[in-house]
Image (tube, rainbow, N blue to C red; front, side, top):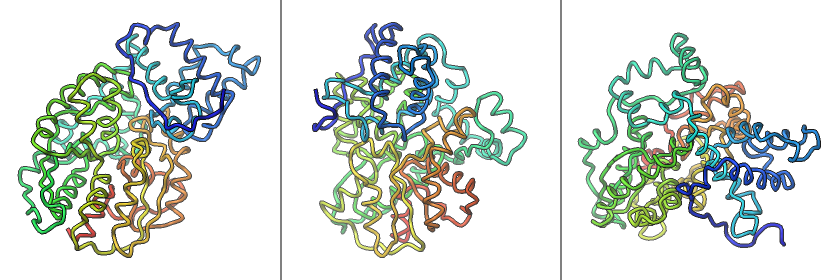
Length: 445
């Protein structure tokens, strides 16, 4: 038996349809097997809060071992996992093909699937996962929605905290007055026929965040790709299912995967590549969906055809070459490499892309922001999320750049809140949230 593995990590399909998957006794046995391995290793102590909670629970027990820990005390450990995959990708020496076969994030997902089956997911939590519905409502009344969601609103935010469990001080994304797919109807940038990559075609999967919240990401993407000779179409059939995955509703994710893969498959058949605007959604299309519905051919084709936007532009730069016209940016840039970008195992593509901009001072932050999707805005998690992200906020404050961007724009907002908690000033930062917006600026758009 060896500690660690020299082979690349492998992930197995998720057997969520098997009766054993949500069998309480078998799940408890697997939790105990994995927790005991983690207890003896502890390499993940400095990642998310799941591991400190686990180790403290065992250390404070009667015997100092897992045998004296009650299974009912496992829930805080399960709740603290943000499904970021960093333990699996960067820390754990026992992931497959190692014989221990340890996949901590997917085990936490399994535990949440049992909770969902038992009806233990709250009504409020379920409503927060309905991002398409919420996005349509928010865009339809953006003025009212943004007023109500503002941290400065002392009327509505305490109510949201009491009713929905969303911390009153957590920054929430603003809603656009018009969804990206509607704006796209009036967007007709001229495709640069002289660009080296002319002839490429891309269908942009808008994602819920890109469609309903920060549409500037999609607008910048269309302009940059047109400048580089790429024809684009923007679609948003439905949510990728990441919010449902966080709550253990794997059946809902499978349904979304099958339907969306079929819709996007029609574009793939016409020769289009697929781009996802947000790293979490790209991860779902590329990696999670094929593990949830492994026998769906449309899902397999979509996985192979999908790229993150940063990944796609770097590929153009390395193969055909980018169109001329990039100019330096005013002020330095701090780019945060999001956990769900790192989990795609593609390298620091956002940093590679921004290094294409001449004479720009770039600093790279490859550490968890602490946000964790909707996890970090919840009342029970917000302070912990800021604590986890404090090293990132400290780096940004020290660097004092003109631009702070992240492949996860929600993480970017969370980082800025961390900077403010350190008595830093984020008011002078540019409005750009995603690296592609800076590329658009560098092209003078």
